[in-house]
Length: 102
Image (cartoon, rainbow, N blue to C red; front, top):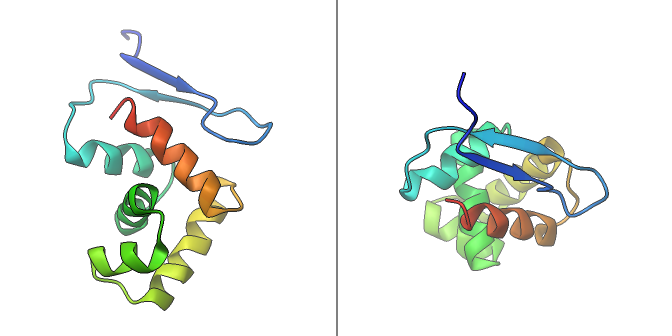
């Protein structure tokens, strides 16, 4: 098996270290969604995380992807749990780091 094209390490902003391998990923809009799904998020959760990472506002992100604010808040709690993070700042940092390879 060939060595992955991209090795992204230390995604977390806390003292835990995560290593994620991505192989043969093309650079397009869906790339960020695919990477977030690889981290365990559903497609809708990945879309929210991506949008939130770029807007910084849960209310604006929810409106952009057609969710109610309360649904977005509920999904955000699930995202935090799945990714082992505790804040929107942590999520934004991860999305920003992934954006550099997406």
